[in-house]
Amino acid sequence: MGELRQKFEALGNIKHVVSACTFDESDNEYRSERLPEYSQGFINGAWYVFQEQQSKIDQHYYGQSEEDELKQYAVLSQEKIEGGAMLVKPPLGKPFNFDLLDSYKEKIEQLEKEKAHLAEMNKRYLGKMQEQQDQIVSVKDVIKKHDRYITQLTINALEKALRGES
Image (tube, rainbow, N blue to C red; front, side, top):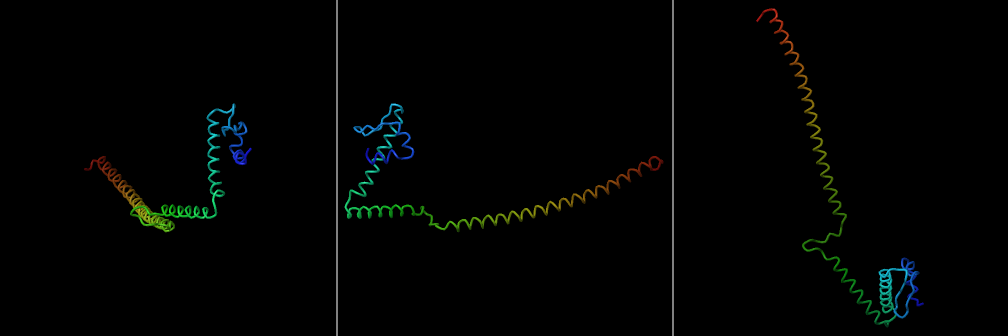
């Protein structure tokens, strides 16, 4: 068994499934009578991808001279720089905003202003409610006084009527 196949079969999720398969050296595939065909396809697909990635690694590290490796490293570095530059391009019409803290501070200040405004409105509302309750109490007192007065007038009028006075 090759070293590459040993690494593949040692992978966490693969080792449990591969244990139910046999490897066909001539076709470079895993086969099994117990697994459905689509499962075998997944295993073989993973095997082919694993081989491809390993060949790229081997070619990169072992298949080049030191000069070629340095050239490849320079190309990769330049690609990373260009890719990084693409990541930090500002959206059209908008300046860079790297300091998220400032935007959070602005949002907090805005929320604090809104909180103060709402507290002031609440204070005014409570004041108005207290005024209205005071007015209601005053109106109740007036009604009670008027009720007593009207009741007294009614009683006096009835007494006069009973006495025959007009």
